[in-house]
Length: 174
Image 1 (tube, rainbow, N blue to C red):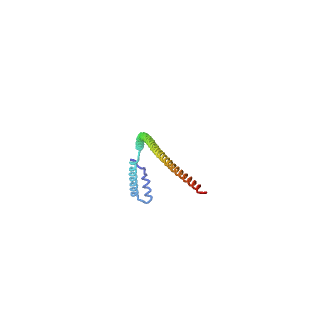
Image 2 (cartoon, rainbow, N blue to C red; image 1 turned 45 degrees about the vertical axis):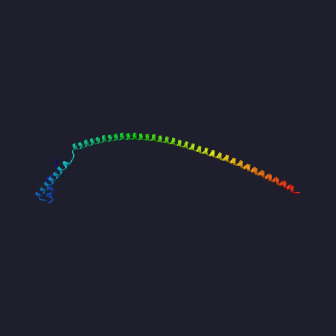
Image 3 (cartoon, rainbow, N blue to C red; image 1 turned 180 degrees about the vertical axis):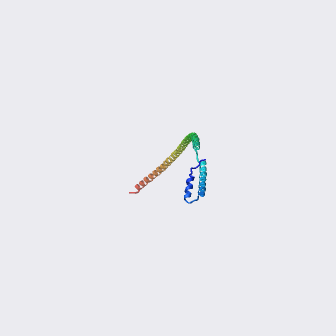
C-alpha cells in the first residue's frame, strides 16, 4: 500500500487563515487525506509492475513465435497443395492434349475417307456422264448418217427432176 505525501499541518494552517475554525479545518484535511490514500490504493492495485510487464512481454513473444510457426506451417501446407494442384492441372492438360490430338487424327482420317468416297462417287458420275455422252454421240451420228442418206436421196431425186425438166424444156423450146 502506497501512501501519498500530504502536508496536513500546512493544509490546516491554510484553511484556518482562510477563516475556517481549527476543528473544521482538521476534519477537512483528514477527510481529504483519507480520500487521497483510498484513491492511491485503488490505482496502485491497477498499476503494472516491471514483473507484470516482463510477463506480458514474454507471453507476447511466445504468441508471436507461435503465430510465426503456424503461419510458416500454413505457407508450407499451401505450397504443397498448390504444387499438387499444378501437377493435377498438368495431368489434365496432358490428357486434354492427347484427347484433342486423337480427335484431330480421327477427324483427319474421317475427312480423308469422305474425300476419297466423294472422289470415287464423282469419278463414277463422270464415267456415267462420259458413257451417256458417247452413247448420245453415237445416236447422233447414226441419225446424221440417216439424214445424210435421206438428203442424198432427195437431192438425187431433185437432180433427176431438174435434169428431166431441162431435157423437157430443151425439147419444147424451138
